[in-house]
Length: 109
Image (cartoon, rainbow, N blue to C red; front, side):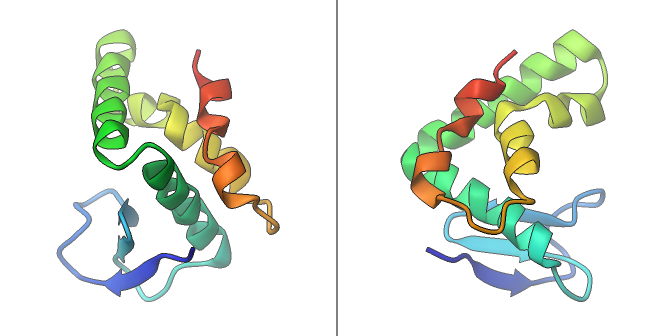
């Protein structure tokens, strides 16, 4: 499964280059690099594996927990297990899609 890329100037919010909301990847700027596309594709598979709503709820819970724990929104973002997994897997050109969609479980601290 590949994401549907949507270029927009108003979404995602400032500070973010791309955001995946199944099955779309909304991005600002001129293009997405192959690495960025792989990163967002990992999120696409994570969302699909968790049946969307649980993914978004868990993502929010991890982010809020990170804000409380680290008192820093940027660090909270990078500590979200879904993000840690996507950053780890984005450099792998031969992603095993659905199988790796649960890699985030290994990234929980």
